[in-house]
Length: 440
Image 1 (spheres, rainbow, N blue to C red):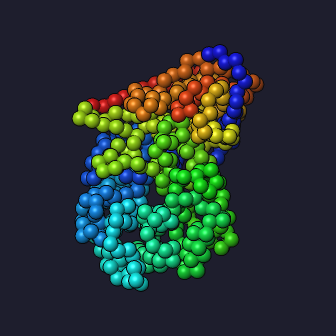
Image 2: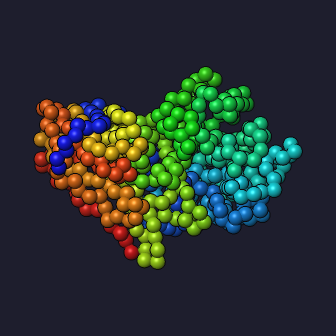
């Protein structure tokens, strides 16, 4: 490879600076399992490092759910998907609004209309009874996108009363339940009236969620960035003397952003923010309930793997400890090394802004982890959304041994929708090149 231009961006990694254990916190999906929870096969979920599932039967029957008199089908699907998730070692987040029937279709009543919550209370009693009878322990997402008319066609005040009622009922029956919210369509912002009113209310009424959640979809507040969003909401909580257990972006990436380059960027930013993340799902009907939120595609011949699946597969292979890194503009990197210093480090490079051209990855701290490092660079292609066989080895990246403890790797970013996986290993370590390919 011969690059005549200087790098237009440089990201940095320090293998000697541990940040914490690698936990795959961004490997969650919204729906993506079949209605009965049986598909796709385990190999595809295990291969992408599956950790979280968020569901509640959306679009089944349509109209469906409690308000349409079709609660049972959505509950059966929710329970089946919960059991599959837990069997695979994941955590399940139940979507109460979907079971109620407020999943974007027109409904004839909302909780608290004309001050009457009795029907909503009967629904909650049924759901709580079913959860208890099944002996399951989901996280409770009490309502989805209550700041968006599509999912909450009433006032903010009416939603807050709905939140209080649901919170109290769930907490009374399941004192140790994990309650998630408010799962807004827009990111938290100190200037956002909706968010300020919600936080004032939950503080005054002792109904604070265990995990504060929001979506990174439109980028309205501060450029669509989990790092900035967490900083904003932490400040807002501190002003009210509130503490929470954690943070969750339970939908991230618009449909146009679901490509290896931007998926890797979201992974890096969620890891940097220490926020759990679930990939958004833009499927309709059968496409919602399958394909792992568009990581796969399938036909009568079986499932096929998209470039995005290999992005998460690469992410799943980043075990050990997370190490320090620095982004540069719209490029970011998630870096890990093996905890026992056996001679391997991996870096997943993402691109959020369409940048193309030569980029540099400077890796310091080699003496702490590697001796005489060899470099393997693989490109994970978007391929215009068509299936791929696996990452392609970039056989001759420019490598500059800049010192006894650092190396600079220069890559040519020709398509911003692609991601790169860089593996450094000692001279005695052989990289396992086996890849999961299309399965019939």
